[in-house]
Length: 266
Image 1: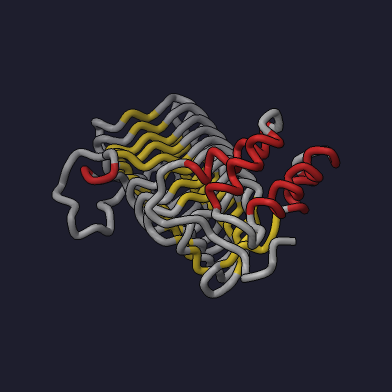
Image 2: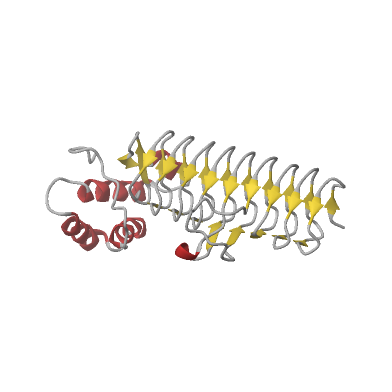
């Protein structure tokens, strides 16, 4: 039987799984679906067309699924989808999508959104992503798997963050961050590879060495970026992580690629 505290307000149209737990003073709207094992600790508000996946835990004072902070939003029936085994800590805000961005905001499985993090409308967050305290994503941001965004960092709308990337705390990210890259700064600049993250994730020395060679070649001073990409692709086309970076660079983007400081491609 569903564990619902008597002070919680649950719309009768909401879909609440039998093994979900709804704590004191939570509010759940009519178009919400809460799956098995979900825990809303207390004082959580879930509205809109929101789905919360299995075993996800939401801590007090989180605001989940309320209207996007977008003046162009016109009440369209957009959605918010949260994956399984994700942890949403206190004061996190997650907004649904908009007509101009595909109508859905997604958060993947096994993510950790720490205190005060914000996920804006139409963001697409993959699995195993960490948003540290007060990390902020504007609308339409894409964050690939295993990326970590440091505390108080802010990501401009339409920016892409590649897999296994590391965003330093208090960084302002205006450009796309390559997979396996590390950036930091008031206006973030590329600071090499996320070597610590790669080692923690079990990448072997050979793969890391290949990635470092590719990085040096891609961000060297000679030639254009397209020429350097072609050269690296010819030399390392069988290396999957290197190809991840090249595919990311070659993909369509409105923000451009975050670059290292001039002369710093070590």
